Each structure stands twice: as C-alpha cells, then as structure tokens.
Amino acid sequence: MGLRFAQTLEMWAFEPRKEPRDTRPPVAALRTSRPVPFPETDDRLLESLRAKRPGAWLQFYDAFAPYVLSVLRRVMGPDRELEDLLQDVFARALEGIDRVRDAEKLKPWLRGLTVFTARELLRRRKWRSWLPLGNPEEEEDVIPYPTTTDALEERMLLRKVKAVLDSLPVDDRLAFTLRHFEGLELTEVAQTMKMSLSTAKRRIWRAEAEFKRRACADRELRACFDEGTVFAS
Image 1 (cartoon, rainbow, N blue to C red):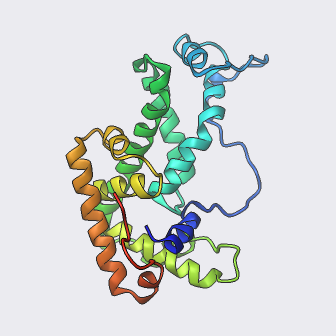
Image 2 (image 1 turned 135 degrees about the horizontal axis):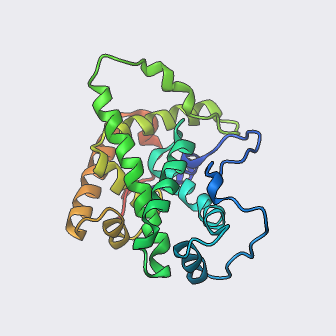
C-alpha cells in the first residue's frame, strides 16, 4: 500500500473526542457489589467465564472491549452504530463463551464474532440500499473532521474511501479491510471469516482490483498512492 495512503487511512479508525461514559453491557445480573481480583491470564479469565464467577464477565468486557472496538472501526470505518455493534458482539459472546475451550483461541474467536456481527449489519444495509427509503445526506456527518491543517481535504478523501468500500460485496470488503486495515495475515483472514485460504485471497484480490480501478479514476485518490505497487498481498 502506498505510504501516504496508509498514513491517511490511520484516520479511518479516528474517533472524535466526546464526554466519557460507561459503555459496559447493561446486564445488572452480571454486576457484583464486591471487588473481584482480575485474573492474571487469559486461561484464568476463561475459566472464570465458563464457571460464571461473579465479576468475570465485566472483567472480560473491560479487557477485550478496546480490541473489539478497534476491529469494528477498521471494518466499518466511521459509523454511528459502532457502540451498538460493540454491545451486540459481547451479548453474543455471553451466549457462546462455553464453546471456547482454549484460552489461546479466545481472541481469534472474539475477532470472528466481531466480523460476523458487522457483516450482518452491512448486509442489511445492502438490502436497504435497494429500497426507496432513507436519505444519503443523513450519513454525511459520520465522517469526523480530523484535527489537521488539511482537515477538509482528508475528510473528503475518507468519504471517497467509504463510498468505494460501501460499493463492494460485503465479504470482499471484510476480507480487504481485515488484510489491509487490520493488518492480518492471509491465513488469519481466512480463519476469521471461516473460508478457505484460496477464497480469502480471491476476495481480497477482487476488492484490491476495484479499489485500484476507482482510485485511478479519481484524482484525489490517485494522488494518495506512491508510484509502484498499491497493494502487496
């Protein structure tokens, strides 16, 4: 990926400053009035989760919510529904945690859950886009103003990047963003999306080809790429 473009895309996961608030799951039954020591390892945390020990779930949320939100920001980009998606991911994790037997698989399992939760929302949006409902201008302000001297130019660039990604087939988009925005290895992309390595490569290649095509047709996007190879899989 071109250096300037890679630097610009760091804003893709940009989150505007706002008043801090408690975003933990509103599950009163999981709260505890007495302090619970934080497990020192993922093995102990997983053991506590499977045993449904008091406080374990909130410890799990506090430990992994930043990572889940990071993945969501990279596959979704600036989006109004990120916090709702975050809650959905952990609600599903609560239902399925008993299926995780190995602590080493806890983070990859949660990443896959995150991606498939985002996938459902993206697919619903694809369906809605065929309906004569909604106003595209309503989504305009989800792209934040980066705090740089070139804020307007960068904001317009992000809107173009988002438009390209929104036009891609959902699974192509996810494979592409996991590879180039999240920085996963090809094998990790395949494992996360539960597809063969060859399928993952094919989806990434298609998304790269469309991204290149759109970039070459747009002066601002084209200028963001260095000379030579745009993407290197």
